Image 1: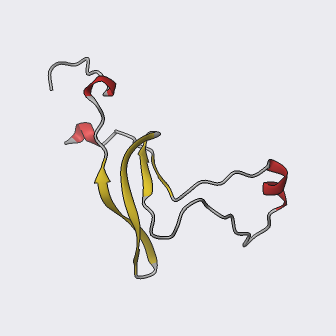
Image 2: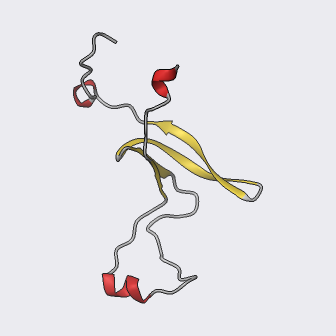
Image 3: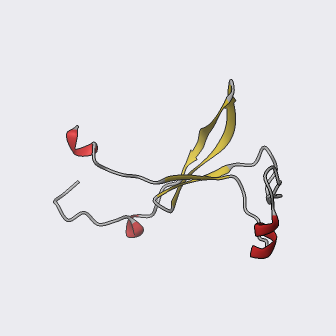
Length: 88
C-alpha cells in the first residue's frame, strides 16, 4: 500500500458555469452572487486531474456540504493512459 501514499490527484467539483467580463468580476465585493447556468438539483461535474470522471449531487451533512456520486463515467480504452511498467 505504500506505493499509493505518494500519488497526488487534484479533485474539482463544478457546480455550474458563468461568463462575465473581467472588469465586472473585479468590481464585485464580498457577498456578491454570481448566477450559474444550473438549477439546484442538477448534477455537479467531478474532475480528477482535469478529466471528467463522475457526476454527483450536492448533499448537506449537518453544517457540512458533501457530494454524493451518482454516476461514474467510463473512458474508452483508446483514451486511457498507457502503462509502461507491464501488464495490468
